Length: 141
Image (tube, rainbow, N blue to C red; front, side, top):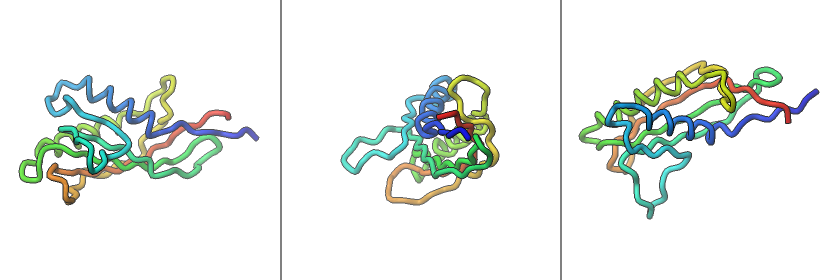
C-alpha cells in the first residue's frame, strides 16, 4: 500500500483565492487581504479581510479526503453591511468553482457549501461566514 499525503489546503486556497479576487473587476474585490488567521488585538486590520480555516478532513477513498472549510469575511460595517454581503457572495462563487485539473490544485470537487451567514461580534466590521466541503486528492508520499 502506498502512503498518501494531502496538500496544505489553507496554503493552497489562500493563494488561489488571493489571485482570483485580485483579477475581479468589482470594487469590493480590491485590496482584500486573504489569510488563514485574523490579525491580533494590536495589529492593524485591513479594510477587507477573508480568513480561510481548514476544519480537517476524513478519508473517503485511498487518495481522496473530504475536507471541511470555514471562511470568514470582514468588510463594510455592521450598519452598512452591503460590502461584506457582496464580497461573501463573490467568495462563495469563486470557491464553488475552484475544482480544476491543473498542476498543484488538490481540489477534485466542491461537494457542498452554505452561507453566507451573519455573525455578530465585537468588531466594527460586518462579519459573514461560509462553509464548504471539498473532495481533495492526495499524492504518494
